Length: 120
Image 1: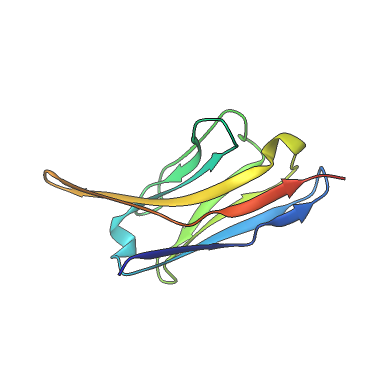
Image 2 (image 1 turned 60 degrees about the vertical axis):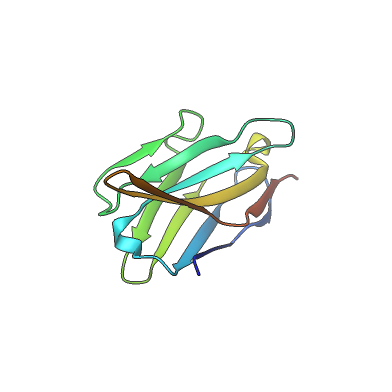
């Protein structure tokens, strides 16, 4: 059974920091590209950051560049999202995603979401 379990969300003041973690089980973690998405009520899910399976390449939404950092520890089967200089506009649910493809078969898994609230 595949599980992606997010943790580290919470309430933080504007300008503060949080680190989200996503622990994976049931998959060969090192074979999966990992991403963080977020989705506010009534809005489409937005890609926040992504990292390749070996961790060599990262990609960020323009809105978080320079503030957020994605990283992974393949030995611990965990992906992280370090969020600095948080703004009220960063408030929403954050989801962990794992993707891989072997030939014509694709695999796509989601976590349950972690709430991040930025407010004074």
